[in-house]
Image (cartoon, rainbow, N blue to C red; front, side, top):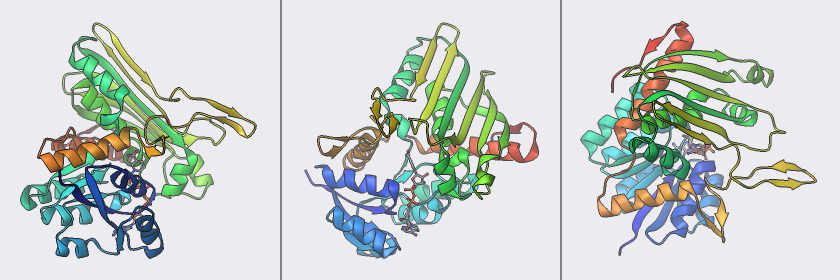
Length: 337
Ligand SMILES: NC(=O)c1ccc[n+]([C@@H]2O[C@H](COP(=O)([O-])OP(=O)(O)OC[C@H]3O[C@@H](n4cnc5c(N)ncnc54)[C@H](O)[C@@H]3O)[C@@H](O)[C@H]2O)c1
């Protein structure tokens, strides 16, 4: 079977993981890495046997690349993704779909009119624990959900690195905003959110540390969302996330603060990543590889993606309401998408 010709736009942290996954798989051929930073772009390209280009338009003009990963900073998703979709090419876009609702709508329009196919990389859709929670609820094992909680706390260093360029609800929280709606099968219709900034200003960063929200779903189910880049460096795990759904008949609980592996060394205690992008027998494995390979298969075989564009837009719409509520100090309605 022909290999899908792919390129990665953005050779940073996530872009390199996508590039490596494509380079290691049998179903895709990594053709190019796009990054205006020549040093970074050419280093990643060389590492994975691809060519480096500075601008995605060069690949769109040449026409050989069939599908693209877009792994740009959150605030840069709209222009480049719309450009590629308008050229009729498929895109795997790192989450969040966009950092504004208007931006997400522009991308969705480009998909509709340009003919390219879009999947937003909501990683938890490929995490066996979250998929297990969604399956248990869909099978009726907890009855009707009554209250739903999603939590994600990451190291302070992440917020410092973002330096105010993305909100904690878009960079981190969008995972859980998507998860609580997908796993419960219900849409969030309004939120009341408060933010706190104590740690980031001490590091000279103009950003919230955390945002906590109370949510109401379409059928009266209630929920809460807690996001923060507040984890101090001595904490052994980089990802501290939870999901809980209490229903009329039972409960689904998920705690990912460790992945079942604890390393206690003289330098300290560490709970390493065992599920998102671990290296297993010399190859990248885990949820991210599953997501990237799903994208390749669906584009090549013209199958449906497991992440509908409308769901990714709904996650952006909830975040849009969260930020409006932080600003207004009042509950805010989630816009329909
Ligand atoms: N799925 C996850 O769990 C997860 C984890 C971390 C980050 N992310 C997402 O991945 C995306 C990328 O984050 P990151 O941490 O890898 O960013 P990064 O800052 O490490 O890398 C971004 C890269 O984009 C390049 N770039 C800038 N403008 C460009 C352009 N016009 N064309 C091509 N390249 C350009 C930069 O030079 C840089 O190399 C973000 O949207 C982020 O939210 C997802």
